[in-house]
Image 1 (cartoon, rainbow, N blue to C red):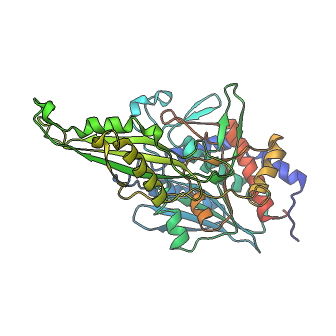
Image 2 (cartoon, one colour; image 1 turned 90 degrees about the horizontal axis):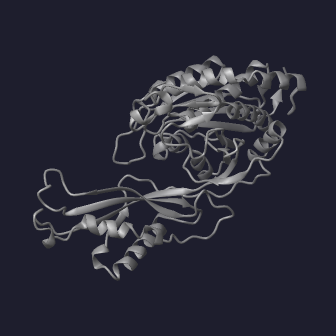
Image 3 (cartoon, helix red, strand yellow; image 1 turned 90 degrees about the vertical axis):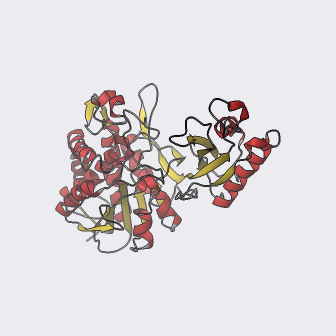
Amino acid sequence: MTNRTVDPRTEAAMLGSITAERWLGLAEELIQAGQPAAENPLDPDLPPGSEEGIAIVVAAKLKAMGFEVHLDAKRPGRPNVVGILAGETSPSLILNDHLDTYPAGDHSLWTETGGQPFTPTQKGDFLFARGTSDTRGNLACTLLAVQAILESGLRPIGTLKCVYTVDEEKNGPDGSIYLLDERGLTADYEITCEPTGWTRPDGSWGMSLALANSGHYLVELELVGMQSHLWRPDLAVNPVEDMTRLLSRIDSLKLSHTPPKMYGGTPPRATVLRIQGGAPREMQFTPGWCRAVVGLVGLVPGMTEESVLADVRAWIAECAKDDARLAAKVRGFPGALFVSGTMEQDPEAQPAKAIRNAYRTLLGEEPIRYRKNAFNDTIRFAERGIPAVTFGPGEDGWPPINEYIRIEKSVAGTKVLALAILDILGVRPA
């Protein structure tokens, strides 16, 4: 006999097994696993990380829970983890997170962890370390939610696929894109457990439900000048000085688009990420070139690589009307992927409905619905027609230094995920 409800006593026992101590122990183990090798910068001109260390740890945990586990790599040292708990019938659900992290930067700035960014440090309800909010704290939620379900004697009717990807920080070519397009990964629904959490100034907190994501693109601007000796700058055309003047007008760059149902944290806009000029061993001369990398973020459906490049070129042409030296060349940054914004998912349909139901049951209110400005693998699943949403206790907008996650919120998020999984897949009673 199968059904889609759980005996209240079994459900209570399952939820009761999801404790702060269990989540904390799992999160601390995952945060440290395979680091710092798994640092993976977005910069297309820098080498990727290696997620093998954390992948082995996660794969072992899935095997111990009875999953059929595959380590699937497009290139050596970067295995994606795909765990399958086969069900009796449809539907199927992908529960997703990623294995790589942002680089930690200058370790000495990590004051909350004693200068050790990969050493999890608890201070009250906060856990500090690189990867807490993005996203190994969330990854711990996914594993603990599934473990609690299975330990309670429940078995989902549908098929559960726990998919942990590499290369998410570089937009997924070796991770989600590879699995979907080259390995045939698919499912009826998908939930990515990434940071959608928030904390108000008064200390109250919650988790939003991202029904869509914004896109982004990296664009390179280049100016070429005329060099002179350092001692005669009056004879030079200095492209660094010219680029500085051009970038001072960046707020006037307008990116054309059709307003969506909901914007992300920002409407479509530009921000300066990098500026370089001159060559090593030439400080006796003024620079002959200057390049800047500009990030275009908050992109919404309908915007394309061609349309945003046209907008940037139009902005430069306008700036150059009164200063011809600002006529920079424009191109997509070499190796950068254009990431499109996704359409909003139906909040009344799965998987959003299940998360909303669980959130109301446990927290007594509706989760805030929004468009997440940042990239995550949800985008890649949605692009391929799989209903996909993002939900997780990590802080959306976590600080680059002294990154943290709230422990109480993480326990609540784990419980929401457990109930949502059972709601979507159905359950065979114990």
